[in-house]
Structure formats: C-alpha cells, structure tokens
Image (cartoon, rainbow, N blue to C red; front, side, top):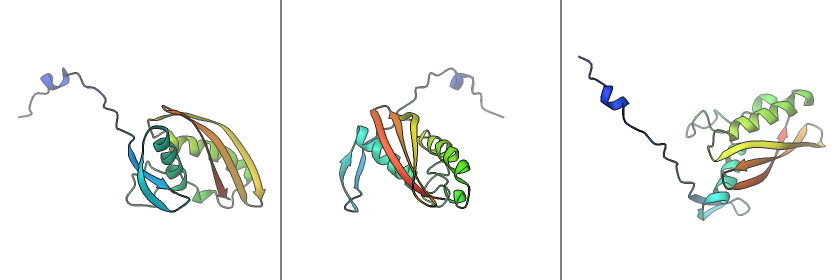
Length: 134
C-alpha cells in the first residue's frame, strides 16, 4: 500500500537562503585565513568558479566551474561568443548572481584572450576578468 501524500502536499514550504559566510582566500599570499561574507564572499566565489574547469574535480558538482579546455585551437570568432555564454552560464548557477554583462575582450598576445565583465550580485556589482588560452 502506498502512503497518502495528500496532507504533505498541502503544507506551505519556504525557500531557505544559504549564508554566504565562508573562509577567506588570500590569493596573492596563497593562504586561507579569516572569513569573508557578503560582497567579498561573492567576489571569491566568482574567482573560484571561473578558475575551475568543470568536470575535472570529483569534489565539485558537475554544475560547478566553467568549460574552457575545448576552446583550444578554435578561431577567435568562435571563442569570444562562447566565453560570454560560458561565463554567464557558470556564474548564474550561484543564486547570489543575478546577471553578467559588459563583456570586453582583448588579445594581449597570439592565442590568448583576456575577458573582463561585470557580475551583478545581491550585494553589488563585481568587476572580474580571466585570461584564456585558445
């Protein structure tokens, strides 16, 4: 006999927001020291997401990170729009990030694209950048 779920479906459910409080990465010193919250925590999350290759690390969900490896050898006319899409897709998994725009592309040397963008978060705007080999 299957138990009735009629009473269960009548309940009101709320969505609980997870805190953004986390350990603070000090990337310039290769240290994790102290704590970050709010805008600083989101900046750190953005950095980690765009620096982590998706599907490469067993400790992360397959929804975490960005896919960049398959861009190697592709023409720049393919790489730039794909970077825009992939960065947006990767960051929008974080519910603290509402949108990503203002993409700017620069080519400092052959086979390298520097992308800068703005992430609009619940705590304010974050300017971020990443250099990608293609």
